[in-house]
Image (cartoon, rainbow, N blue to C red; front, side, top):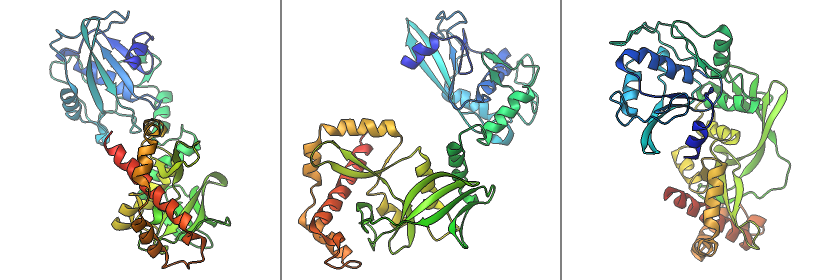
Length: 390
């Protein structure tokens, strides 16, 4: 509701527009033009077409409007169009009651598949005019391209830059390239790493890690062999280092994963409850997803390895969800600790697993370390179960 209030009280711009009423059958070409114009924006946010409010911000309502469409009807209409490359815009219609009226908010979802246009002429039945093949509508400030025109070269160039991520910071461009999994290739020459075949300026190299670290962490406990070997992954664009991440080889070096982040419930307490996690919308997890799915290299886990890995690593959608979850769990700390204290059977099982790779004198076999990683594994699994209830 806060978003709606902000939109209503703001002048029309590249993100939203007002319409007093829905489009009649005679105006279906205008509907196409207006929706395509909001898809074809050079920013990276959703847009809103608010129906039932006039240009002077007066609420007129749509409760008696016979031309109203719901999400399914509007989606079906868009799918009936000859959209080039089948990049049909995604829209959501949401009715909201405000001041004894109903208004409809059409959310036009942001996409990189721009510019959107038709590859055949389309003259909707009863419409006053057609939409021509190749005609590109775009929105700049509060203005859409006229229906008898096409967007300027300047605007179209900005859309193509958006499509290929050329308008984004290099970290964001890297994320886009990492999604193109089939074009990444594992290589072993004088160096070992991953090369993006479409643009070899994007390359990731494995380097030795010289820090003294534990050879077993909680997320390794589900594998046949728990010993870990550490390396460093350096993300490069041309000669520029974009990011560095720690990686580990697991299950007898049969697959590789990024080292998950270490989090905790009540971090300032004397004995914080730690867990392992990734944030799904980060560059880090984009790299991890590549490792999990790449086909042409020896680093991807099989189904069993992957399942057991992510039984002990929490995946949050974003930082906001992580903060929300931890805030909700902070008041349950005593209960969580009680539920996650490892049993002697769990510790014995952990010791038996580690004994295949470590001697009794190794620090990894220390009782306190065994208890710590078992508890961390249990806390991670507790949060994973908790997320499923949200």
